[in-house]
Each structure stands twice: as C-alpha cells, then as structure tokens.
Image 1 (cartoon, rainbow, N blue to C red):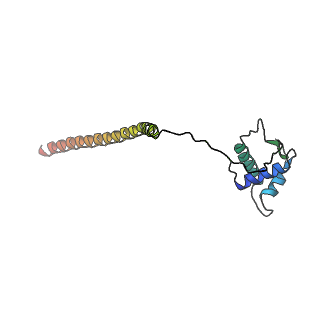
Image 2: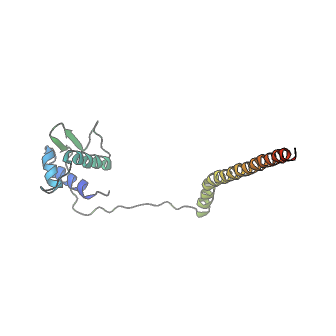
Length: 150
C-alpha cells in the first residue's frame, strides 16, 4: 500500500488518537505550517477521501474512518502494531509462453483489422473525391468548349 505524504500524515494522526475525534483544526496543523494559505477544508476533505479510497472505506458504512459532522474524523478500529516487518509473499503461477503469445496475437487482431478497414475507407473516400472532381472538370471543360465553338 503506497501512501503519499499528506495521506500518510492523516493516517498517523488518526491512528494516534484512535477512537477519539481528531478535529479538522488538528489535521490542518498536522498537514500544513501555520504560514500556509490554502483552502484547508477542501484539502482536508480531499486528503481524507484519498485515504478512504486506499483503505477501501466508504462514508456510508465506514469501517476505518468515521466522519464527525462539523468537527472532524475518528479512526474506529483498534490499531495493531507488528513487532517484525511484514514480508509479502507473492505466488506467481507459471504461464505457458506460447499460449500467451497466441492470446496476445488474438487480442491485437481485431484492433489491427479495424485500423486496416479505417485506412481502406479513407483511401476509398479520397479516390471517390478524385474521380468526382475529374468528372466535374471533364463536364465543365466540354461545356465551355462547346460554348466557345458556337
């Protein structure tokens, strides 16, 4: 799980006071120096919403972050701290390369076909325009020539 600076700071601030209300003012002080001039309310909302999104939490049925209207937020669960670093083990299932190449070729084929048809359509339109122009020019020249003769 990757957290950007401000999102990480909000998480740490909420966990430090889990079960208690962390006011918007406390979050403002944790995130920005006192001489910073930004729209704090909008930025706090955005940062908390990013944290919710990363945690898979919702405002309708919060599991981690509860909104306390007109006051702030509360981190609901009891945080658990590990004594040792978490090592993620990733299992990668072996893949048959020939199957993967044929699958890739199959997925590319419709895109290549649509590109080919688009190119042929454009060429056909250009050719039709040239033929139409040649026909109009021929009629105009023959009409003009007949007027000059008479």
